[in-house]
Length: 286
Image (tube, rainbow, N blue to C red):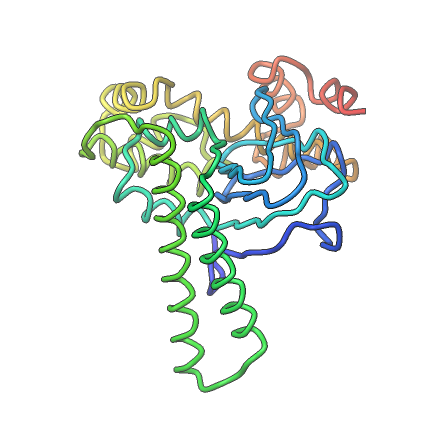
């Protein structure tokens, strides 16, 4: 999975934006993380079957391997969206957040900010927006361009830590120290984002870290409460659902995109883990 020179982007979500999604739009976050910081209006989201109402001053943190459906938005909805490559975000977050707290964030992705936190986040976002816009419009020597890219990455890193600080200030973190088991889970997640379309066996991910299947499986279950197979299938099914929502793609094309040997194998896999057939899932979208 390649990375752009600046592995994140920031844009204003507003009625004038080209990315101003209609009700029912599905936002897929498979190899990215992100936030939506609401400045005005209201939105109703459905993520992993759970409803969320986002109001001014709320921050919703998008996590990987999830599909978020925009159920309804007010006509005046406005905010800021930041999306970043997972390869960029995870090494930053892994320095300060344990696997248990990553699970806490996944299970409770929305937090309401204080007035002071809103002012601070607004300042950071405006600074990044202004800097990246100025960089895109200006030119310079190769050395200057490289310096600008590295400075922008550093600003993104600061924003990432600030978002984590705001979140865990408002939602009590689980007190636990970072250890080797956290590193095993986090390395598994990185490997999963890179290989889930071609590798769906737990043994593959255990071998990537030179661990026995039994030990690897026990660590993932202990740190997250879910099996390694759950994480793998969750990623595959989330991607499959995203592809199925594109009416221009046939089931056969989707099956081969996800490296299933045949459409029938894909259909069986999807029904086993999603509970419905691919065709039924598409019908239910209408």
